Length: 366
Image (cartoon, rainbow, N blue to C red; front, side):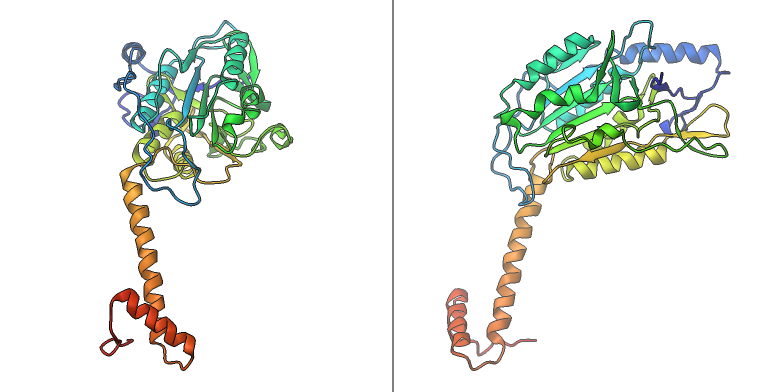
């Protein structure tokens, strides 16, 4: 059975890239680690959830971008599995992940209510009932859907609940038939292991593993306008620091906060994958260094941006104006090109009228 690994930092380590596991850590360090962990469990997002953000309608959007006709940027729901029965270890640090998700998405304009948009330590029946309830919602005013599931995981898309097992397909299924989500981006993020192997550098190499489970290629698994994000490829482990949170979720939130106002969702997760692969490792013997490789499966048909903002608005506005200038320059060049056709004379006359010029006596073509 594959369980999400705890990557514990060595004493004095400041960067998560140096997170190692050591069995010789001094007891005082464990005490400080536990004290810090307990303090992180009470963290709350510093954004007032009573103030609701509404989608801006006057900002420009790209032509190859999902339309945003609703008043809400998107609907967010987080399934956080942190405490388990005896069959699984608990997942300290998961609350830190939840807080970071809430913070970065609220700052990007998403409305998240801690009492309504989070289910913590749910059992299988409770999660299935909640998914059925969410699937029957009216999403007409929501421009997107984002579901996060943080838990332990296994091969073939099995995920742990507090009292049993659920599959990835069971989580996505209730939303496939939703009419109000048609032609809208649906994003599912799974922070969990997908096996007990590992991606490694060093002398010892693990056996090869497929990138995705075979179920991914079934017709009913994925529908259009869907993005599925796994913290690890099929058969491998995902890692979590019991104080700082999981590698993948923390890097996702950092990249969302830094680039979420100007880059589309695929670019953001590409940045996240690069950071997780390049900045983190985990070692038990200082010989073999275990890495983590996230994976995306996308059927998005357009670009999806987390919000509309003035920076992208001005960029798109001036890009459009620049295209108008280029078209005008091209028209001037065509009119100044020597020709005897009557159509050219007509176009020159039209251009003179457009530019407010009486003639082209003082206009030369360089």
